[in-house]
Amino acid sequence: MNKQRTYQKQHSILTLIGLVGIFIGSITSRFTSTISILLLLIIGLHTLINNQKNAISLFKKVGLPFFAMFTVVFTSALCSDNLIEAWIRVRIALPLLTLPFLITGMQHISNDQYRKLLYFVLVMSGLFTIGILLNYYFHFDTYNLDVRRSGAIPTPLDDHIRYSLCICLCFFVAIYLWITSKKRALNGLLALYLVFIFIAIHILSVRIAIISLYIGILLCLLIWSVQSKRLLLPVILMIGLVTTPIICYTFIPTFRTKMQLTQHNINMIMRGEIGNYSDTQRLLSYKMAFQVIQKNPIAGTGIGDLKDDLKSEYTQHYPDKNVKYPHNQFITILAGAGLIGLLVFGLSYFYTILGKPFRYREQFVFGSIILLSFMTENTLLNSTGMSIYVFFQLITYRSVEKIA
Image (cartoon, rainbow, N blue to C red):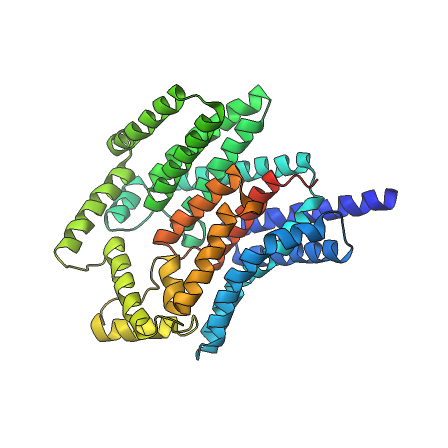
């Protein structure tokens, strides 16, 4: 019995270290995330080998959709001529293959340890965001000018889109803790955190993060109103959500500038101009991707060859523009793996939202936010986005699967 307790304690500590490493690494260091995922993979494999309680059944229950998404990338890579680029895409996608093992290893964490982990995530995300906003305050005019030029407020790893997505997901972690906490003092601190992150996301002014924030809140309100059968408070809160952007437009310079820039970009697009703005470049990336798709719509060009084929299209039609992957996860899969790959990837991802093993309110909100990010970004095409997805998928599933 003592040996079993020691084993459990050691694995729980190592699992927590791995989870913390993935989260911190997703903000500061891709290498840290990679090492941490490997640590959790070893723990998950060890749990399976030793046939721990519920481990094998849990592994079978959640494994298929993640394996399928990885298989799409892997088979597309095998069909590529550029093996170096193909290996890069496979390496980034590897966490999808390991996710079932990682989920299995999560059973070592007790409920108390799990909640402490979530509070740690909120503290760290809050501290990082305070640092970012202080830097913005001290360089207020410079960064506002950068935003007018389609730039962004600096964030860790120079990836303001994925950082904003990360703190958006942290916002809903705080909501989960607020709903499930019975301590008033902690609820007060959580309320302050929610207000702070809500404002911070508007200051950073990443539009997909703002949209995800509002859609996520609406989903939470919808779920709560259905479960509680109370309609008045959700209606009042929804009215508040409608008026909030107007207030933000009035008082937050970066938000106002981003909205004005969006309107300017729309006008440029209507005139058929490309320019060097993020929106026009994003639409151009879609156009070039569909040029590639037309050449091999069923099987795709091969995920490893996609960059080369896009470069060829850009050189032919827009030689003065930088080559970019299409800013859409599904279009990228369609171009690289074809209609077959898109069908498998899309069905697999939607299964992680609507499939029976994942059919919980927490998973639905998380999956919907990631799905929204797919619409304007290749969330899973770089290691930072993949680390964010893996970490929040792990803690989301742990919130509904009471395995400790």
